[in-house]
Length: 475
Ligand SMILES: Nc1ncnc2c1ncn2[C@@H]1O[C@H](COP(=O)(O)OP(=O)(O)OP(=O)(O)O)[C@@H](O)[C@H]1O
Ligand SMILES: [Mg+2]
Image 1 (cartoon, rainbow, N blue to C red):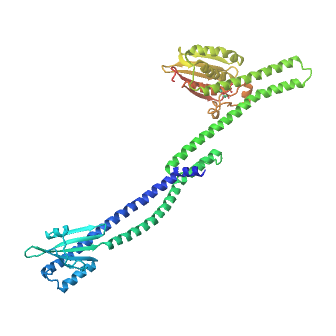
Image 2 (cartoon, rainbow, N blue to C red):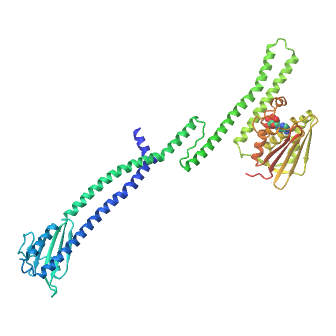
Image 3 (cartoon, rainbow, N blue to C red):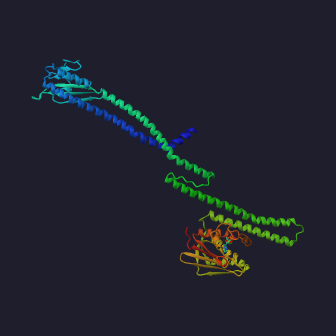
């Protein structure tokens, strides 16, 4: 558990932000410290060398002028030599042309002979300066030149310890390190604060999503700390909105289906109970009630069949059984089948074909669609009314128009008529016999053919349905 939590933390944006902020905050300081110490030491050594060299040269000139090499009794120069050696914490050695040490401020090697590469170089007139960084001292050899003859009469050797510089640099190093540790702690605290602050909206977002998931909080998700989050919030709200609509319509559909399937069953039960409750029921009443029960069974069957064809269309969207269909013949067949119903209602049924039309359609589905439109025209009509069906086409589409002289559809119902189980006048429709699935099936079938359906209606005057279907099926 803890191991998993550690891994999750290491993978988190928060941890990565902390690392990035720490690197950005600490690395420049570290580089700066290393660079500063190095350049400080170099500069300090070079400054001190220049200083010593110029002091030594002044003294060298004085010694040449007073012939100090041959007679070291001059107290002034001796004192100045001692002073130089004292100020710089170093040793001064004077060497004459025989490589004898004439003067050693440490008094250790007086009268000894010295021959070294640097000394030889200086006898050839060169100033030599060497820094021994390991032992931390500078050694300089300066030629003592007779200004008149330009002849090197001796060499002055100065060696100075650089301990003070190193000590300074060590002190600096220590101070910088302390400062660095303190600033690292501060940077860590700031990084932690920033990382927590910057990643907070993520936490809030996931909590809000969780609330939506668990069904709490009907309110919309609105995390707008970053513009990206605004985007995500809006899109998520759209998504949940659509899911809610889908869920609502699913629930409504299920309750409608249950209700519609229950109604015929209830009627049958009432009929059967009333027969069972009576004794010596006349055979005529039996027959009448049984006919009613048969009617209810028919009604139930129709609802189930309609539902099945709707479900099939939903499931096999795009799976059409396309063939070339003569639309004129198809319409004649449909009208032939519906004519008995129209006659019963005393409604005049007329077909008008403007030209021969052949279209690539799914014959079964298109038949369902057209049958329902004409059936509606007959059902929702007045006695002695009419239904006109017309068929036309251009090079691209087949146009079908079903108009009637019926009761019409109120304007506020027009947008609902394609919904499953929607009926304008429930009580009236009940006696006419309908479930409100017909137009849903019609619209589905037309849309599956990439066609369009439009309705125009005036209450009390009649209704017109216009259907347009492409002649060639577009997959
Ligand atoms: N031509 C029309 N004239 C007047 N009202 C109509 C017409 N066509 C449809 N309607 C109204 O629209 C409603 C929905 O029609 P739809 O065809 O979907 O269902 P239905 O005819 O009631 O039942 P079903 O077709 O499933 O047997 C009808 O109940 C009716 O109120
Ligand atoms: Mg109908």
